[in-house]
Length: 123
Image 1 (cartoon, rainbow, N blue to C red):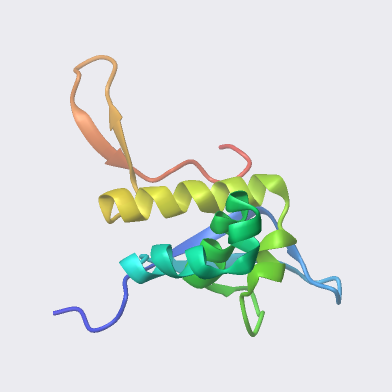
Image 2: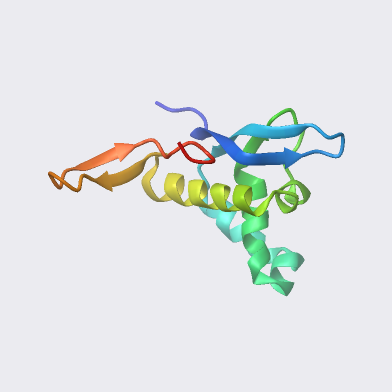
């Protein structure tokens, strides 16, 4: 029996550069709850700009990033676009399938397989 939320490790392609100049790339994300998706709808920033929803949502489910003490919307806002996109993709994979793996089909035999996503920046 699992006692806590499922978490998934990740490595950002570029990394978040903190004000002290340290780049943080390694982190974890937990599976989202229904409340994680509902609560941001009450946030005034989301009400003014619905596109901000994903910023609030990621700040709720990213549980660690390097040595940062807290993950808040300012951290998510400070990500490079490629890192932001990477986290959105990871969020969708783990909350749609319950795994960070990708489902692929072999072009030769047609069999379905789960594989690890390619490393950030390509293989």
